[in-house]
Length: 203
Ligand SMILES: [Zn+2]
Image (cartoon, rainbow, N blue to C red; front, side, top):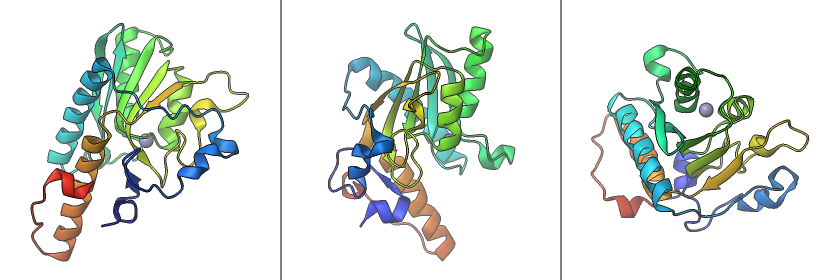
Protein backbone atom coordinates (compact mmCIF):
# COMPACT_ATOMS: atom_id res chain seq x y z
CA UNK A 1 0.00 0.00 0.00
CA UNK A 2 1.21 3.49 -0.75
CA UNK A 3 0.99 4.93 2.73
CA UNK A 4 1.73 8.44 1.56
CA UNK A 5 -1.44 8.38 -0.54
CA UNK A 6 -3.49 6.68 2.14
CA UNK A 7 -2.55 8.96 4.99
CA UNK A 8 -0.44 11.79 3.64
CA UNK A 9 2.24 10.60 6.01
CA UNK A 10 5.51 8.90 5.47
CA UNK A 11 7.91 7.58 8.07
CA UNK A 12 11.12 9.55 7.79
CA UNK A 13 13.92 7.66 6.14
CA UNK A 14 11.81 4.64 5.22
CA UNK A 15 11.48 3.62 1.60
CA UNK A 16 10.87 6.04 -1.24
CA UNK A 17 9.65 9.36 -0.02
CA UNK A 18 7.98 11.39 -2.74
CA UNK A 19 8.62 15.09 -2.27
CA UNK A 20 11.68 14.54 -0.11
CA UNK A 21 13.68 16.62 -2.57
CA UNK A 22 11.69 19.64 -1.45
CA UNK A 23 13.83 19.70 1.67
CA UNK A 24 16.68 20.99 -0.45
CA UNK A 25 14.59 23.80 -1.92
CA UNK A 26 14.45 27.38 -0.68
CA UNK A 27 11.87 26.61 2.00
CA UNK A 28 13.88 23.71 3.24
CA UNK A 29 17.17 25.55 3.46
CA UNK A 30 18.75 25.09 6.82
CA UNK A 31 16.42 22.26 7.68
CA UNK A 32 18.16 19.99 10.11
CA UNK A 33 17.06 16.66 8.71
CA UNK A 34 19.09 14.41 10.88
CA UNK A 35 18.19 11.13 12.41
CA UNK A 36 18.31 11.21 16.18
CA UNK A 37 18.26 8.11 18.26
CA UNK A 38 19.49 9.11 21.67
CA UNK A 39 18.05 7.22 24.63
CA UNK A 40 16.48 10.35 26.12
CA UNK A 41 14.79 11.30 22.86
CA UNK A 42 13.36 7.80 22.64
CA UNK A 43 12.20 8.01 26.24
CA UNK A 44 10.31 11.28 25.79
CA UNK A 45 8.89 10.26 22.42
CA UNK A 46 7.50 7.12 24.05
CA UNK A 47 5.58 9.37 26.41
CA UNK A 48 4.31 11.36 23.43
CA UNK A 49 3.27 8.05 21.86
CA UNK A 50 1.34 7.15 25.01
CA UNK A 51 -0.52 10.42 24.59
CA UNK A 52 -1.21 9.58 20.94
CA UNK A 53 -2.63 6.23 22.05
CA UNK A 54 -5.06 8.05 24.33
CA UNK A 55 -6.20 10.11 21.36
CA UNK A 56 -6.69 6.89 19.37
CA UNK A 57 -8.83 5.44 22.15
CA UNK A 58 -10.91 8.61 22.15
CA UNK A 59 -11.40 8.39 18.36
CA UNK A 60 -9.26 11.46 17.79
CA UNK A 61 -6.51 11.63 15.18
CA UNK A 62 -3.71 10.07 17.23
CA UNK A 63 -1.06 12.69 17.76
CA UNK A 64 0.60 13.19 21.14
CA UNK A 65 3.05 15.73 22.50
CA UNK A 66 5.11 16.41 25.61
CA UNK A 67 7.15 19.42 26.68
CA UNK A 68 10.43 18.77 28.47
CA UNK A 69 12.36 21.21 30.62
CA UNK A 70 15.62 20.37 32.39
CA UNK A 71 15.06 16.68 31.71
CA UNK A 72 11.54 16.62 33.15
CA UNK A 73 8.18 16.44 31.43
CA UNK A 74 6.19 19.56 32.34
CA UNK A 75 3.28 19.09 29.91
CA UNK A 76 1.50 16.20 28.19
CA UNK A 77 -1.32 16.41 25.69
CA UNK A 78 -3.04 14.68 22.85
CA UNK A 79 -5.17 15.90 20.00
CA UNK A 80 -8.68 16.80 21.24
CA UNK A 81 -10.22 18.54 18.23
CA UNK A 82 -13.39 16.43 18.29
CA UNK A 83 -13.87 16.41 22.06
CA UNK A 84 -13.42 20.15 22.45
CA UNK A 85 -14.96 20.93 19.05
CA UNK A 86 -11.97 23.16 18.52
CA UNK A 87 -9.86 22.97 15.38
CA UNK A 88 -6.96 24.54 17.26
CA UNK A 89 -6.87 21.79 19.91
CA UNK A 90 -3.87 20.02 18.42
CA UNK A 91 -1.60 18.15 20.82
CA UNK A 92 1.17 20.72 20.47
CA UNK A 93 -1.11 23.69 21.19
CA UNK A 94 -2.54 22.07 24.32
CA UNK A 95 0.90 21.02 25.52
CA UNK A 96 2.30 24.52 25.01
CA UNK A 97 -0.50 26.11 27.03
CA UNK A 98 0.15 23.64 29.86
CA UNK A 99 3.88 24.31 29.70
CA UNK A 100 3.38 28.08 29.82
CA UNK A 101 1.29 27.62 32.95
CA UNK A 102 3.91 25.33 34.49
CA UNK A 103 6.77 27.73 33.76
CA UNK A 104 4.77 30.84 34.60
CA UNK A 105 5.87 32.57 31.42
CA UNK A 106 4.95 32.55 27.75
CA UNK A 107 8.62 32.20 26.89
CA UNK A 108 9.66 28.54 26.68
CA UNK A 109 13.22 29.17 25.55
CA UNK A 110 14.64 26.38 27.72
CA UNK A 111 12.02 23.81 26.74
CA UNK A 112 11.87 21.10 24.08
CA UNK A 113 8.69 19.76 22.47
CA UNK A 114 8.35 16.14 21.43
CA UNK A 115 5.49 15.36 19.06
CA UNK A 116 4.67 12.16 17.23
CA UNK A 117 3.92 13.86 13.89
CA UNK A 118 5.58 16.78 12.17
CA UNK A 119 3.83 19.99 13.29
CA UNK A 120 1.30 21.70 11.02
CA UNK A 121 1.68 25.41 10.12
CA UNK A 122 -0.51 26.52 13.06
CA UNK A 123 1.51 24.61 15.63
CA UNK A 124 4.83 25.52 14.03
CA UNK A 125 3.84 29.19 14.28
CA UNK A 126 2.97 28.73 17.94
CA UNK A 127 6.27 26.97 18.60
CA UNK A 128 8.15 29.97 17.22
CA UNK A 129 5.98 32.39 19.24
CA UNK A 130 6.81 30.64 22.50
CA UNK A 131 10.46 30.41 21.42
CA UNK A 132 10.77 26.72 22.08
CA UNK A 133 14.36 25.56 21.99
CA UNK A 134 14.05 22.28 20.13
CA UNK A 135 11.31 20.43 18.27
CA UNK A 136 11.60 16.66 17.99
CA UNK A 137 9.09 14.83 15.85
CA UNK A 138 8.50 11.23 14.87
CA UNK A 139 7.05 10.87 11.39
CA UNK A 140 7.02 13.45 8.62
CA UNK A 141 3.77 14.85 7.22
CA UNK A 142 4.34 15.29 3.52
CA UNK A 143 0.91 16.83 3.04
CA UNK A 144 1.01 19.60 5.63
CA UNK A 145 4.27 19.40 7.57
CA UNK A 146 5.66 22.80 8.49
CA UNK A 147 8.98 21.62 9.88
CA UNK A 148 10.58 20.94 6.52
CA UNK A 149 8.28 18.68 4.50
CA UNK A 150 6.06 21.28 2.83
CA UNK A 151 7.54 24.39 4.41
CA UNK A 152 9.83 25.16 7.30
CA UNK A 153 8.23 27.73 9.56
CA UNK A 154 10.46 26.75 12.46
CA UNK A 155 13.55 28.11 10.79
CA UNK A 156 12.37 31.04 8.71
CA UNK A 157 15.08 33.41 7.56
CA UNK A 158 14.62 36.74 9.30
CA UNK A 159 12.48 35.29 12.08
CA UNK A 160 13.26 36.52 15.59
CA UNK A 161 13.47 32.90 16.76
CA UNK A 162 14.46 29.67 15.11
CA UNK A 163 13.93 26.25 16.64
CA UNK A 164 16.34 23.36 16.35
CA UNK A 165 14.70 20.37 14.70
CA UNK A 166 15.23 16.65 15.03
CA UNK A 167 13.14 14.10 13.17
CA UNK A 168 12.74 10.38 12.84
CA UNK A 169 12.58 9.52 16.55
CA UNK A 170 10.51 6.30 16.84
CA UNK A 171 9.22 7.20 13.41
CA UNK A 172 7.77 3.79 12.64
CA UNK A 173 5.67 3.69 15.79
CA UNK A 174 4.55 7.29 15.29
CA UNK A 175 3.58 6.64 11.69
CA UNK A 176 1.94 3.28 12.39
CA UNK A 177 -0.52 4.61 14.97
CA UNK A 178 -1.77 7.17 12.44
CA UNK A 179 -1.98 4.62 9.65
CA UNK A 180 -3.87 2.26 11.93
CA UNK A 181 -6.32 5.01 12.88
CA UNK A 182 -7.08 6.01 9.29
CA UNK A 183 -7.29 2.38 8.15
CA UNK A 184 -9.89 1.65 10.82
CA UNK A 185 -11.78 4.83 10.00
CA UNK A 186 -11.92 3.88 6.31
CA UNK A 187 -13.29 0.47 7.21
CA UNK A 188 -15.85 2.02 9.56
CA UNK A 189 -17.00 4.37 6.85
CA UNK A 190 -17.20 1.49 4.39
CA UNK A 191 -19.08 -0.62 6.94
CA UNK A 192 -16.54 -3.42 6.89
CA UNK A 193 -14.48 -4.69 9.81
CA UNK A 194 -10.82 -3.73 9.76
CA UNK A 195 -8.48 -6.66 9.44
CA UNK A 196 -5.80 -6.83 12.04
CA UNK A 197 -2.38 -6.30 10.59
CA UNK A 198 0.99 -6.39 12.09
CA UNK A 199 2.95 -3.24 12.43
CA UNK A 200 5.78 -4.12 10.10
CA UNK A 201 3.51 -4.76 7.14
CA UNK A 202 2.13 -1.26 7.35
CA UNK A 203 5.45 0.49 7.08
ZN1 LIG B 1 -0.98 21.36 14.53
